[in-house]
Image (cartoon, rainbow, N blue to C red; front, top):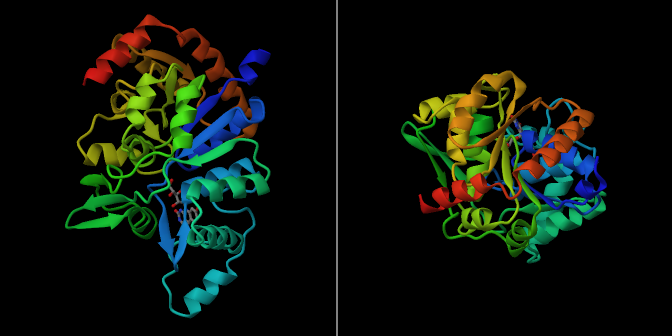
Length: 333
Ligand code: FO1
């Protein structure tokens, strides 16, 4: 790869497993310090008085090479002795927190209780676990995603894990987001980026909680860097997770057209899976630059290959008049 591209300052907006796999790809090809990951914290929850941040932790464990490869979250070969004790004592144990994972939650909760910001705590953890990328929570203030189902409003993990994402979603609330703010570190990273990438994460659950923070959409629109999104769909469907059903249940546009719609006015280009190459003409007709590539990431080598492809493709978008026009139209809406 062109050595200049290895030094590109890439900002990746990411949720959990899909985001972490994409992050690992950029991490493998970029120079140390060039990658900044802005992580969703809408999934965060307190368990037994401890602060648990699933998306940040999935990113942390993945980049540290410690993630459970089967699950895509949690620590590889973790044990459950703490959870077994909690279960014996009669505590609810539907969220499978492993023993090693508990250590991180204890450390984070301890540091937060001392008055540290989540940003600082994650920087400490990332440094100690050997990350060279910068891992940032989108915000330091709690902004829990709430899921409206028939007759109730559930916290994200309650719906996703305890209810296995089964109840149909009628509405989403990014609670506290409007009153919250993105951290100065996040705003600065977006401003100085050479490329902004929206990871193949669920737009409604992982990306939009970050976009709901005041100033983030505006910062993305104002950024000099091209902004591209990688669709989480393969063959028109989410490989895992509730995205397809959510789009249908909420009466939103489905397929890649729906993904493009979620990011309308923010992105210069959309990357779709090669299996969805048939979607390309219609998306291009809408004025979007589109790349069809193999986006299903199983191994780090493939993630790195995709990251290189995205870096090279982004060069063709830089300064494209269409981008400015699309942003201008999007900004007005
Ligand atoms: N996902 C599950 O489906 N079941 C679990 O019991 C579970 C536990 C868990 C513990 C720590 C952690 O960091 C993630 C965990 N996840 C679990 C994944 C998590 O719910 C989701 O990946 C994200 O919140 C969605 O991006």
